[in-house]
Structure formats: C-alpha cells, structure tokens
Image (cartoon, rainbow, N blue to C red; front, side, top):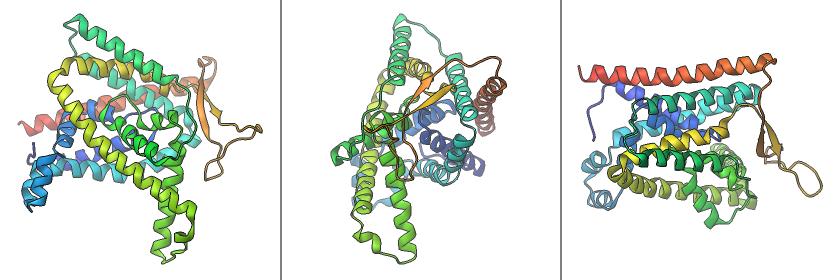
Length: 341
C-alpha cells in the first residue's frame, strides 16, 4: 500500500488530514465522513490494521525500514501532520466562528453532510432488500444517538480510558461524532477542554522553567486523565480498525449501506436551528467549565422562521457546504486522473 506519492499528492493528503481534524473537533461532525467522501477511508482503515504483532516484531528486530513500509507510514504521517496543523489552526478558527456565527457554521456543516450523503448514494446500487434494511438500521441508530440525553461528568480513570476508545469512533466510523459521544458520556468538557488547557498551561510553564505546577494536585490529575484518555484513543483506533477491516472485507456492501443510513439519521445532531440547553446545578446556577463558561448540556431544535433573513443566509451556507464537498470530490478525482495518465 506504500506507494510513490508526488508533492501534490502529499500536500493534498495533508489538506485532507486538516479537514479530518477540523471535523473531529466539532460535536456532531465526523472526521470519518471526510475520509469516506474524499476517497481514502479504506486505505486509512487498512493502514491502521498494520499496527499488529508483525509490526511489533519488525520494530523489536530493528528492521525499521521494513516497519515503516509495512505500516504505510507516509500515508499515516501525512494525515497526522494535517490533523496536528488543524488542531492548532483551523480548529481554533472554528472555535471563534462558532461563537460569533454559530448558525452559519452549523448550516455549513449540515450542507457538507448533505453533500456527503448525495455523493455516497449516487453510485450506490441497491441490489438486495438486505441493503435497504441496513440503511434503515443505520438511520434508526443515527436518530437515536441524535436525541439521547447527556450523562454527568465522570473522571474515573477506567471510564476515561473507555471514553478514549469511544472518542476515536468519529475517525473510523463515518457519521459517528466522537466529540458528540463525549458530550453524551458527560466528559467532553473534562477531556477536550479542561485536560487540554491543563496540558497547554503545563507546556507553557516548562518553557519558562516554572515547575510550580508539580505541586498543583488538580493540574497533575488533569494531565494524568489526558494521558489515560490518549492511551484509550490509541487502543481504540487500532482495535476498531481491525474490526472494521474485517467487516469491510466480508460485508463491504452492507457496511456501506449502514454508513449511508447512519449519516442520514444523524443529521439531527448538526441541525442548524437549535438553542443551547445549559447544565444547571441544584441551586439553579449555571455549571461552569475551567474557563468560567456555562457548560452546554444539550440542544433544543426548532423549525426556522421563513420571514427571518438569517434563515435564508443559513440556507445559503447549506448550499456552500454542499459545494465544498462536491469540490473536494472533484479535486480528488482530478488528482487520480492525473496519476493514471
């Protein structure tokens, strides 16, 4: 699977990683959809499968060149580079845009998912009733996920490890948002806000040789939680890829049918017209995160007012989202045609 890649191939793969990383950051949006639509989902899953017993033996025996070729390292490393760039740039921009233009951001993502469903369904041939059944099952599961009530926060390390496994599902299962699942499990703020902020603060302190954080029990606890969460994420990424690789090999058509159904059913998660439902404590006060911001517990969805100009602006951004996906597909197809002469 390790193939010769031109500079443009490598650059495009980094861009795909940026898009995947940005999608993973937003609750309700799945990075796996990006992988699926722009055509590297199967290579992504099969590359992750290469992290197995044979890879460990190659590494232990010092056969590093063979190890890197075996795990398709160029592909994986370029994707990871894109995700890292995304985390420190695009995802930060998304955070700002969601605060300032929340309706239009959700509308764009809604359009992107609509475009993804159109693209995936366009060439899918329903040749058996079982495929329609799997679409319905996938859609039903997506709808159920969309309307579940979030749990309360839990910092037990075993549960945090399990959250890590669940969080990477958005990368391996198109349509399933790892960030949204963390909200449902009650640990989104703990793991993706508080623990990450603690890491940033710790790195900043180390750079100026300030080691006073070692006496801060709360900071040390958050760093430990982040470490366990990361370990769970790595374990989940590798283990889920093996399961999905087997399923794709044995039941590819039905798997794709389920994915199409699930993405369609989960559209409710990114429905643009919704109001925040904040977490309230026993005294009726807002529950705050580490940045003293109210914690969002869920969303209350409503139908838009056609007389409101923001509705039509949001509709425009839905169209823009659809066009973004179709452009990415066109760009990927064009690149493949150039590769094959």
